[in-house]
Image 1 (cartoon, rainbow, N blue to C red):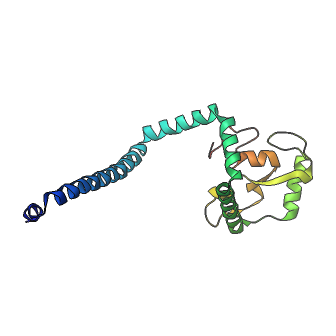
Image 2 (image 1 turned 45 degrees about the vertical axis):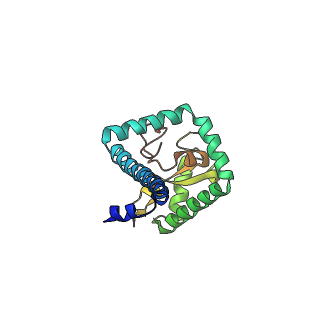
Image 3 (image 1 turned 30 degrees about the vertical axis):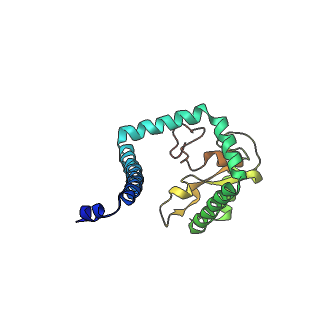
Length: 183
């Protein structure tokens, strides 16, 4: 029935429509192929061996291009989009901090600070008691909801060690190799 209707139309109309239909079919096919390829790649990346190989490749790339990546990230944070992303991260951290429950007193914390004698347990440099910061051994982002931090779950670190530790789990002095978390 449709074919008969098309034959009833003038030839010039059929040619124009045929070209338009071919272009439409190309667009739909390309769109379908892109979506299908994304799904295929996503499933492919979930295979454990491939997932591990991808992580190793990323890690190797990072170690080979550390300076470039740091420079790129620093420049990105200067852009409006980068500032927006950073502020979003700050708000998320503040929200997590508001949900954290500390079951330790100031006197317990002060005692722990005095035990260090102003020396950072990680880098073993003398910083001074007042410059040591509170570090969560189990990072806030990894703590289960409703987790209560006690004096045994926190430790004093210098600002440099605390920020470079990021959200790794601290196991002991100078133990970055065995830490868990993002590298």
